[in-house]
Length: 211
Image (cartoon, rainbow, N blue to C red; front, side, top):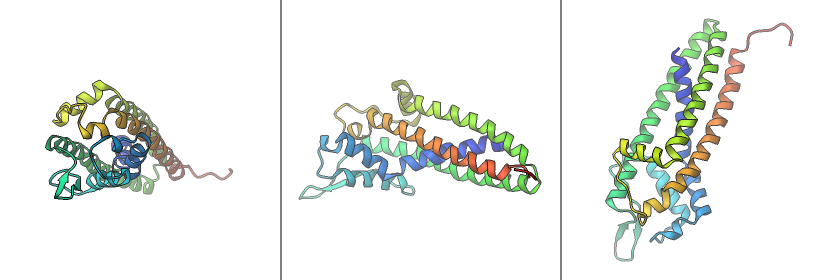
């Protein structure tokens, strides 16, 4: 029964970390929306995307800041409140990263044990249930990312503060970005699910004399 949940957790968390730690995702949105051009900064879209992705991929950062040279000093593009919100978002992603590692280890260990024991059908049947959990997880992600109510619940649970419409962070990574990221996340999760389904089918396929 454990593998039902760990397999689903692996697929969902793998996709989350792949999307939100990737500079390409941020860069695509910034280039498409011209969001960076709408804030007060001399940084380019690619530079901003790299800075955010580097932060999301970093290990236990002390704070979030994107520095730019004003000619007199290096100043942060974002306020302390915006930085605190990004730290909260990073904490959520890091929890997802921990889930990814733990679920991967447990799932692989269970598969190795059951395959050595010849219990392929058990794994095949359990993975079918995992597919259902992944679909439920995708629907939950859409609800949390692509709806105002869902985003408000996440922000409240994470201890984030509501940012004004003039917030530079809200312009860059606000509702429009999350709507796009939700689409990317769904597509990525379905691709990962398809790959894992194929791998599961190969590993659990019963031996046959005639094909």
